[in-house]
Image (cartoon, rainbow, N blue to C red; front, side):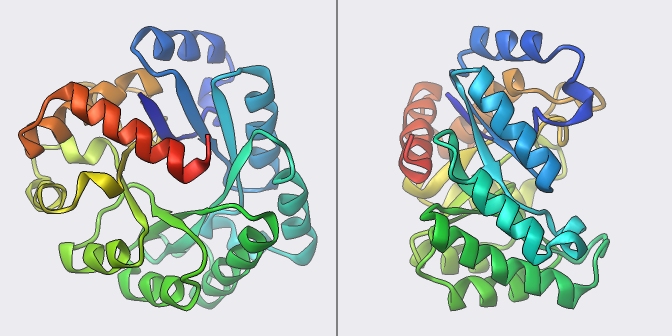
Length: 251
């Protein structure tokens, strides 16, 4: 399996990263897409990708840090994207839940990340929380860039719009939560051909490990829930999500 979205560059992994990756390998996770949220973490993602053969990097500026998306920092992101182990731009997008950056600044940063993705000739990893319509409208304006909506939490109606444009949706630990009936309903309706799985570790730890630090080895619990929802074998989920992730990130 491939963990399509992790943050092994998070400080919570600094003391045992090699063990985390070892456990992931033992759990059948042979590749991990490690995602940055600012210039420093993106540089670290690239460093980790070059130290561990099964790791790859995504470089970009999170909407929480959109106020730092200056010309200089985006130039730095573009330079990092030239590394052979860099496979996408991101995560960028909109977060109206926390509003850590002003909304107009978030939108401007998001638009600029599409331009960086074009220049780098790479797909874009999108974060969207409580900003469904603005996110969708910006993606529609930039439909030439291939996207994945990471840790998708929106409606089926919105999902259909992304699917029609040929984009992907990725699901994480929340799909295993007891109160996630609406999210599971979305999963039941979308095609496997545009679905990925992720941990978003160290966040969003799936059941039965909620409350603990998340890590790629726990991806199996997301895969098992997808298999249960779809009424298919775990092996089929492994195979299809791996193929989708390889295609999206050109692995």
